[in-house]
Length: 183
Image 1: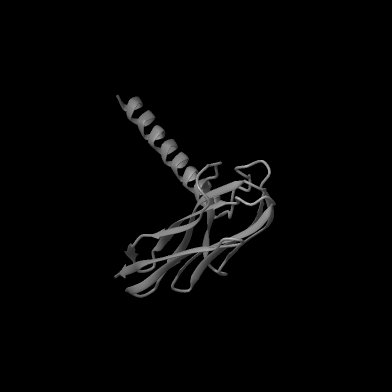
Image 2 (image 1 turned 90 degrees about the horizontal axis):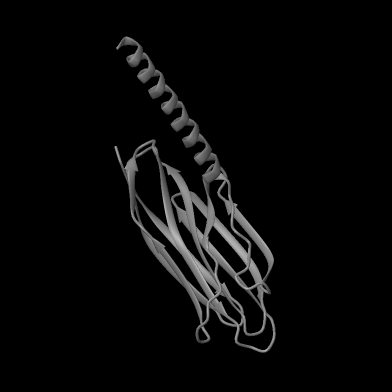
């Protein structure tokens, strides 16, 4: 019986170590700024791409889906921000979901750029990408942005998200919500 308790404690200790290691790896992975750069249409080219995070803050963007779609001529930009809350001196992750949908129904390739922005308090995450869409081609990208905020005093701060598309067709969307920090 005593041997079983010892094995159980050792197992719990190993599980705890594995969970800590897993959390550490996930934290490192989440703090790495990445964005899938593959095109939904093999002919769509990425011309440029840039991500920036306010110094001293952790945050970034990652792509949820990129897929080829078909529908009438349209350019669509979307963003959705949710309210967040937490305690003083605790890291609180604010986030937004972004979406762009671009259809080039012209007879020649066209360049478009899109921009994702998330800001709250003194922290911000920005992502810019320029692509070239072939004649009669289309492009869709759904992404998630996040910034980890830590406040030393209770209060409320505005969370703002923005998605913009510039090119032959333009589009933009804005959304906002609130970060509430308690004692």
